[in-house]
Length: 332
Image (cartoon, rainbow, N blue to C red; front, top):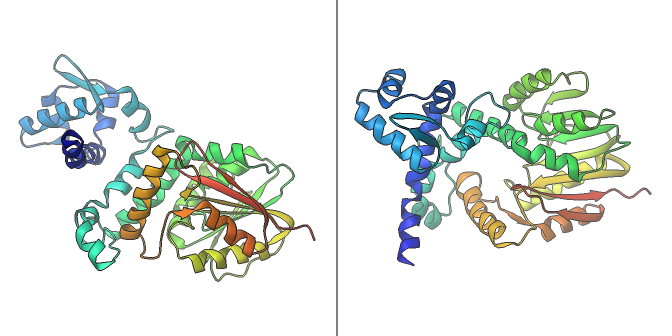
């Protein structure tokens, strides 16, 4: 038991090394060719090569780098997931998660005070950096598998018009439209995520099929002729009352027989690994997002959908971190 406690106490060292390597853009540097510590030091303009040597050796024991003689190169996983520009890049999401470093360091105080504290409120990062890392981190997650899992677990053949409420960078609209050539999407969100969404939509050559609308998803007037409504990443970070309100708005926006898709961290898969993640996520969103946030029980979310008028809620666990619940608006 003491070994496990020691391991727990050291875990933050590991994430500190990972964060530093991402911020220093180490993996881009070593993607070109293996380098010695002196060569890495010169590229990074580091003042003391001894520090760089120790840092690189730490990356090796964490399996972020491989060492051959006196040279270092990316490990297979780093080459796949940590080099910017590659399809499965995960660095933005890692920056977002570790941006909460000071917040977790004040956990005892936040628990006693029942208080949320964002990273730019305690000075760890500035607000623009925080929100950029957050939004691009969500796109990273889509690209490493969540988009594929969403597409494979919802049947949209025959569906023509999608409403993506709070759709952020548009990554899920892009995935669904790419998989369903007949589908068009209307994405509603605030100004900042739409800047990124516009770029990603253009890069995907889907600007003729994905319409971006800058508005508050909770108050903007909605059409009532949608075949599908997607609500992703909303249930986790807002209060139950707000979730219920969004579900009612989605119900009114759908045609009879329309489909709602709720995608989020939700307690659906009760395996030990997933239970661990859900419990840690429940604490994380309370201290890092909002005091009324929470990793919801799937049964609760399904009941909120039923109360809004939807039928046949289906809880769908996924192999990635997020889960799905779908439900249908009655045909009559």
